[in-house]
Image (cartoon, rainbow over all chains, first blue to last red; front, side, top):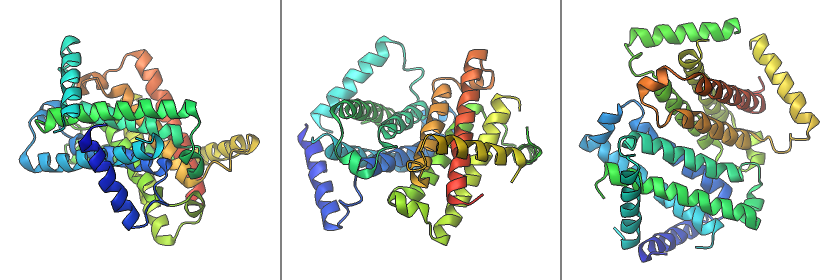
Length: 85
Length: 85
Length: 85
Length: 85
């Protein structure tokens, strides 16, 4: 595992532990949250043409970047809880 | 960007270029594929209890690992095409 | 087709036509919107236990009802545009 | 509620009861299955252009019809279990 992903994993573990969220973070729930975040990312693109999606306005690009980050965070959590990464 | 993610990105670029897939890989289409893969991962868990999802059988765990990999690949592609990572 | 679903279909046709939305309402885009709405519905349940999801508070139940309606509307639109219902 | 949707609801109730599936059919699980089915429908369209999605080949149209039916069935189940329709 890359050291960057391991750092994200460790930060997310600490973040969840501080909030007593481990009880909610079953792989089942995390896979659900991952899908919801992926759909929110898709929502940014859905009424654009493919061509428009290739040349995003800065404001949309910022929301897309946030969406990508959210998906990555839940993906690391799912992997951490179901794969022992 | 971590060197491991950069390697994944470069491999995926080469893979898509060899197959002439760039024409299909608009951010819009990739975000759609990402959501579909996330939902396929979710499908592994949906009829399990939360407790069962915390202790997967080896066979399910293997499919979950594949699902996580598929989501990661499309996530890197979306980022590569919309964020200039 | 039931007369109620036909009425929904006709209302949605008129609604889209008035706003000049037909250009955006390809089956591809509508299937994307359908998935996004389904994920928003799922979001209402994702941190609840299964038991909690069987006994919703009124406020949550109201949001769930809205989510179900949104999914139905896009489902009718997808069917109208790809199946000639 | 339309009589057709009520018939679907009643058939699905009987189908689930015969298989002792009620234990799995919490609104949370059904909303997850709904999202997975919506994503499977989206998968039929994701590499098509919008224009191609407006003029489906018969084989694709048949799979789209199945996908629409699957989404409708889970939508009725979600509504039946969380709304008392």
